[in-house]
Image (tube, rainbow, N blue to C red; front, top):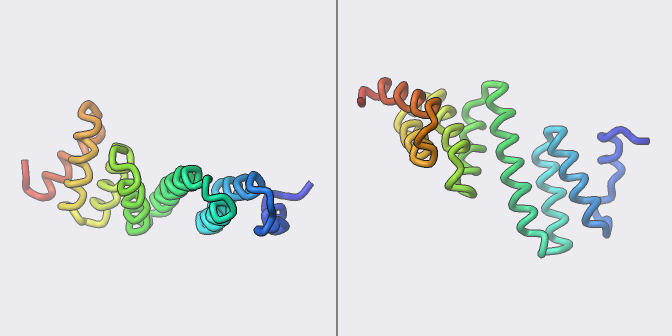
Length: 144
């Protein structure tokens, strides 16, 4: 049995099996290879345009994972980029807005952080963690 990395290397992208492409895309994503994962998923959609919705879901999952990876290594610029992608695709996602707000605050872009955190709080008014972060950002802005 091949290791996951070797299995990916042996995968023929031109395979006629769309299910194999999706398996490879998911495996690449689990390995943290976002670009490779999206490329493989894109190839699946090119073979069968009816797979567009599945690609959209995969794209959002990839952006979330990218944001989380970036947060873990302290790359706030990249984290903000990925969270922005998620908020554009799923504007009702309070977690994404919260993540974007934290990333923007860490970049000292407090006005953008306040906007994102305000949006997150609108979507989840009872979330005390978001409320606390918004209060902290507003204090930094001198707004009460």
